[in-house]
Length: 494
Image 1 (cartoon, rainbow, N blue to C red):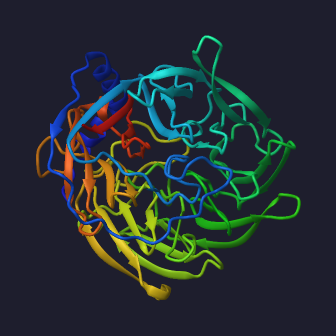
Image 2 (cartoon, rainbow, N blue to C red):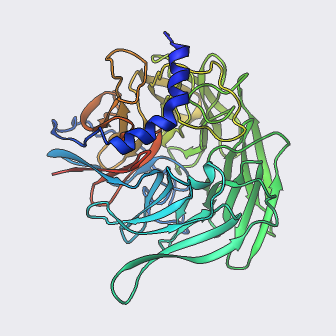
Image 3 (cartoon, rainbow, N blue to C red):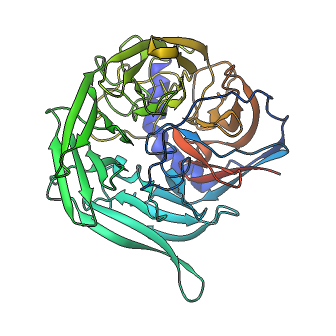
């Protein structure tokens, strides 16, 4: 792999200022295009995780689709016809775009100015903001993870160390407003200076949460009961958590855990599996360790297995464990074609198949406090996309295909149209691994049987359109919503 460390470091140092300059200048424009219809292969996959009765619709309730973090959706994306991309400019990075049973998208964004997390209710017809609500500012990742509950409320932890349920309501005049419908302080178990990173409901209605400092807890905001467990010293949680009927999966910077609650609601550890965290944080990762939110998947119940990607120095290995006891199913090197040994993204899992997108060298404009220096300090964006299938009976795994697609978002697998949906970051100079503030971006549909891009449309050129490895969401009308560093893209077919 060819790197230009000096130029990459300079670009990273200048990223924040240049991003703001790009926003003010507005040098990029949206695009629409006529593209060929998707390939006819609608791959058949097994079950996805079962629906959690305390979350919103599968596919749109969490950043990763469901509480099992499968990154699948039962909804079909933009169909045949002319693909069109439009942008809702919010002057904010919007990593979380969700939707409830009523079909109204809710975005959790962090503004460029002030960086105070803000909730936006979006018009399902055109993506415009109908109402907004500022939350208390906390850590960088504290304004990222949230979910929609079974009553269409956004559940999020804010900088005051409180668990909030944010509802959207129409007033007598017909105008929309966002309100905090319920609040529960978690300060009794979360020390000042720490913050919730990820949260998800379990099958009893409790809200599980994990903090950056390594505290895992449960909260019942109907009774006010909060319980917590401290993980071993030095272990941090830098990604979200996942829940299944078997328990709650948490991956720290050192190990993956499965936890359940005892009779009082207090967390207890069922199993713990260490992984190779490498000797340092790699460029394109936001922490020293796995970049994965753990993914539940499986061909029987949809949750027999849990998978992550490790941070081994010379490779990125997909690790698959049995949910029941944490025993190993396989460890498979992935992202080899792109020679990019790292993934900050949650794997996509459905049936026996897992898909991994590489992020090695992705130029994030900022990393969380305490992430540590990257080694090397910078690298070209390698990209890469791999598919691994678990053998029948869980007797091992096989690499099905491996390519160099440069996904700039967490891919979503639609079990309705049989396609992977993502945003691709193309290099300004074709054939290179470099990145620039003038890179073009395009929405892409990928055949999961072959890994080939079968349809795409340009979304824009330049930093305004950087999807920053955030997850997209397909709505029930077939629109693909993708957060960027400055707002939300909406891709439709007409």
